[in-house]
Image (cartoon, rainbow, N blue to C red; front, side, top):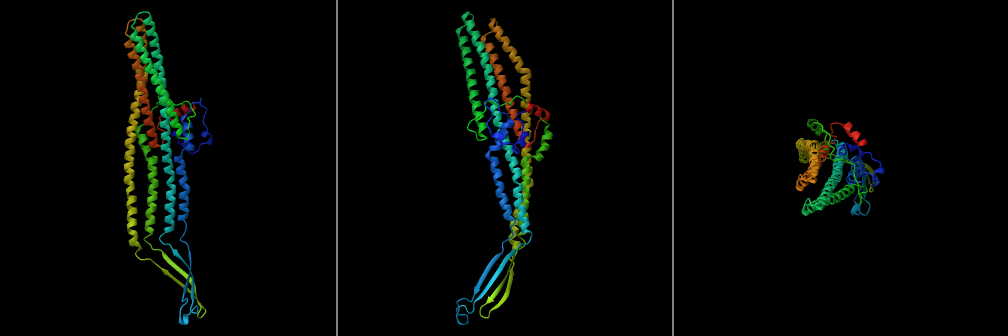
Length: 426
């Protein structure tokens, strides 16, 4: 099925050749559209561009506190025995901070967790973009199908105009019948022109996803009426546990846990140390000096930040449960819409449209023979076109639901993946 979202892997490995515009006579496939978007869409490039920023932050977090070189001068330009430089004392020192509590490892873990969280974020962005590509591709396919319906309507309305003209010339029907048939033909031609314009706009909207100013293709190869059976709802519901949105929450959990670990390290104070050499000009004596300091009350000051980090981490199970329930409700609604719309498409194709076509042909023959009125024939023509339009609307609703289901699960939802492979090979 052309509307499947199982082509997610095309985003990861795609040759640059897809960036070239295909020949206008060749219908554009969904896989080709996906590949073009994967190469050129700025949303994915933006996510990838964040990686160097996070890598730089990780490298910065891996650095220990710097050593500091210092020089102190005492008894300079004094009076009495310390007049001028006589009592000058100079101390050259080296100082630093001895981190305690695993602060370095905690910083590294937080920076790496932010970097790791980029992968599920990119996967979610990729799925959203893939779904948007499929929806715009579906818009083109819908417009093409609407054009086919309009052309069918034009063909049958032209038959009616020709038959009305013949009967008018033979004196078998009034001139008003011909005018009515011509008006209905004009309406069908208007539907054709509108579908043509919608198809052009939909092609341009699709091409805009890869930054093109012109569509570069005349049609797409998708068939909106092709609706294979879906997998059981229970199977799809189980796949929600591996949904990209939940995977993104898992990455957020690692980040918040790392933030908690970093907050806890602040409860253990760092030691500030200093060593140096002091020289006294008065007696030319040299001595070693040293010292250290420990801030007091570190645990009390760190407590609020620790509580905040613990609270943020404790929120995640509730956020995951709420997100899962939301995904489940959306999946249930989309799966129901797909099943109902698919049933309607099949029943219209099997039971309604063939009968309406037979009825329309029979009404035409009866009117030509004078056994039925023109309005009976015209009404059956309109019913046939309305049924086809209803079938198309149901197919579009089903395809839209299918796109949403596959966006939610990140998996193919078709009952038979072998059928998918066969259809893609055609």
